[in-house]
Length: 393
Image 1 (cartoon, rainbow, N blue to C red):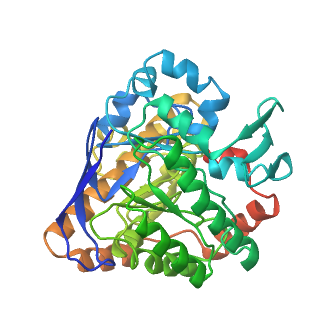
Image 2 (image 1 turned 180 degrees about the horizontal axis):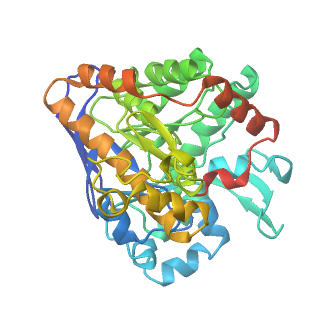
């Protein structure tokens, strides 16, 4: 399977915003792109057709989770993951490196791979770089990720250096095991500038079809995340797509595109939706709030999603107050549509050569979650050594 990428707007500056087209065997992906996360071959509460109606070009599935259940061999026998989940567009798979390494006390890392116990039933498994890409080849995805060693963003220097070196070696093993698999190279290094530079430069030499920036949004400050993103993108070839893994807050998409990122994914949109939190241009809105009890308008009159086109905020508030499943579904489709539409707005701004004005206006109006709260949430994750559920949609 082959991939091709061409920029449709933007300069040769590796840190400039750009739009483009990434062509895969299952269709084109317009970039910048947000990829809804369908961890277990499903975006929770939504059908593939509903997700497609949001304007999403590509979905993400997780090889680790599908390896455990129902098993990649079964999915291969049933015609591959596209047929299995009835999605005819491109699919990117995460190798599951994050999920495996977030098992904390349930796994042991060696040069050969990772021995771990399943978070489902406690069964023991040995996950190697070769197995990770064999699973993704069996799934039949359009874009695959190598097995990488993931650490929290502000990890010890020596541990981060070891993870970088091992990830480089594992990438070569992944590519040797499945030479025809469209395999992006993943760049680690925590918040250590020299390690990020080392890994980015080494990764750029392997001529991968695309590059993924991993190990961010896992405990470090926003300032560090964007500094590392810019540092890495400055070293990557401008004619290949860049994917910032696990990042999906609206303000983060705008800041990422401003630094030359093309692709994003995150479970945040769907998780927040199931908790009653909706994205708006002014920030996050909690639909359970009493102020929506008699609101006869949509949360966003320009959105066009199933929720905003058909239902009042009063009705959606009622659904959540009574824990009706339709509320979760409507909120999920709204949040996905919001992020997809945000990428559409950014593409239009880039093509009109007015992205800086768009970003300045958007970030000036959007009120993100308080940084103190965000850091406390991330600190709890780090203290627990991560959670296997983080990769779920």
